[in-house]
Length: 304
View 1 (tube, rainbow, N blue to C red):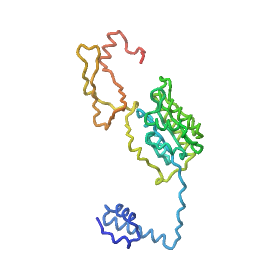
View 2 (view 1 turned 90 degrees about the horizontal axis):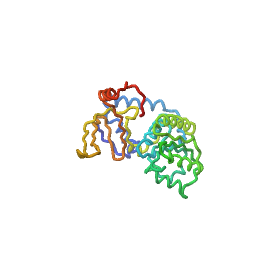
View 3 (view 1 turned 120 degrees about the horizontal axis):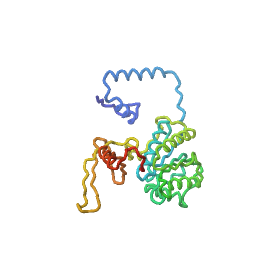
View 4 (view 1 turned 90 degrees about the vertical axis):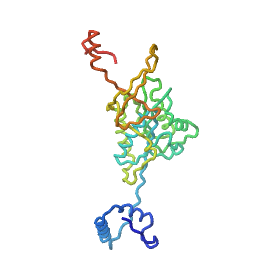
């Protein structure tokens, strides 16, 4: 139902208020409109003759800035999970990719959390290189008013294990920021360590930041660009091998194959640079034949 509004100069509502009212009632039935009219009339009568105290200005709720510095997506997933934990605790949080972060504003941060992976020879992820360089430059400001926490992801088989996380943690402290928690360095199987760290971060931040009203909860456009999958190593997607074609010559010593995996209606989408983990299952019949050929029982311990 549409109604032609009278001239705006005759209305007690400004154009924005009128637009919101029209949008809220556009699909109401006549009965519903009548009920709403009576409801507002009752509210008006309850307030009639009573002094309505002006609402006190809301206390400023500090925003928790959560920076995700990811190369393959693991750090991003940890940051997103922490973001969800903080929102569930009604804390005001803004998640941003390191590459989108305006690092010159870092001196204004009160509560800062960094989740970072490490690549190459102890280097930060590509999206965090600019932030890393800035913090280690002479332009880096003092951070006396900042409290921070760092979670690093890495691989203990590499010499510079979690070096990027160590760099951020040490430099932030050197610039005067206060550690909320000791840094955590997580190995390839990071999930348990991340879950424990996230719980500790939430408790530490709840003690620092008041709970925000729903209208005060921050959102960040950068978060909308982050796509995650419900499938993990612990809960993988079961897929079908649809194509397994040898692409090297018949007499070649190498066996290189073109593989296609049917993802069905899983909704998974891959882009260049994404990592794919495959946990395969051997054919039980082939395993049985091999065990018999080698005169084994099938329960012998072996190397993985």
